Length: 510
Image (cartoon, rainbow, N blue to C red; front, side, top):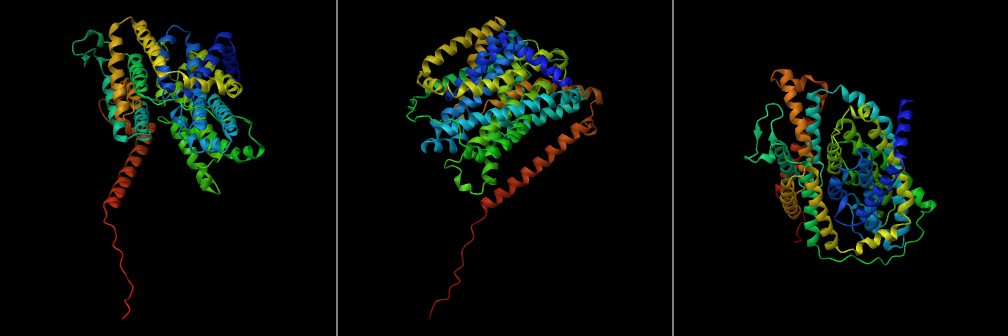
């Protein structure tokens, strides 16, 4: 009953005229940037962080959340019509979605994507509504040793489950942890890695780093792209799927909803992993796997449902534990910090308007996406005609003015430019900035929890074994690392083993 009462409070916040406007603005911007290849929700939210500083905290998070889950559907449009994934999680949709377009079935592909996204998002919101309060009560009892284990687990999953090289991800995570130590020691007040620069005593500003890596870095990379947008020649009709389409995709939507919800809760999970897992699951379960990659509607419905479900359930570790599951939620974490709000177990009690308001706004936002996106497909497609140079120039100007306005410190503008060039180099060399930003966010929490654990135990590491949660997490990690090491050694031996020489057993005729 308490959950329903709290949800009523959330809807009263979400239905405030200004908040309704920000839900609408968020889902429209999210869909638009999902359509524009290469921009994505991470860069967009990074660019908008300074603007949220002047907004009400609840409205700011509601808008940014709308951008996040709205972008998941926006990336579907160009994936299906042009085979260009507007967002990383939409890569899987190109496998069968574009084939359906070539067969004249672009309408049903987009329609089932919208319906699956709505169902997956709604299922995840319901799970978030009832599961989050329970986890909040449990999280209050979590000690510093458990927090250390959870942080280590998050960093491990981010580096090992990512789409890039594990070694490159580890390097980026290490750099992120190093950057998080810049400034004054939180206990002794000693200056660390400041090199005599007074502006570094307070540490590096998260917004400046994020805007540099994802905003300026992505803009510089986009300016290098010289290819022109493809023209849309396919006529989109019969968007509402047929009964057969619903029968074929209903199981994929149901499984994608549950799979995406579970993966989204895990630190390091996200739309890319959930969509890949859903596609693999549907292909394995199919009676005729050869249909996949040739226009199977299940190959569109499952991944699209899963990535929307995961983008919603990822708010559980962010709001309850203060742990962003992926780099986009790290941006949302930074937006909350700008407002003087620290996500964690006490958020549900201290700021119920934000907690329940954001959850209720997701119900509203999902309905808006279902109603608005199908009629506006033609308008969003026309955005591909806008020249990248125009968008980049305007965005860079907003970035520099915005980052200065936060602290009125010119030093932050230099940080943006330096990390912008660094982010561009990372894109060129195949390094992912996500682990760096997540490690930078988790670093202070990890350091504080570790030092608290050492003070409690008198400097003994036994506390990580005697604490049940910590011991369980580290035990699972140890087993997984041992399995990965043995499996890699076995593959290395198989790769270097000499090929067997075939023996001719035929007897020559005499």
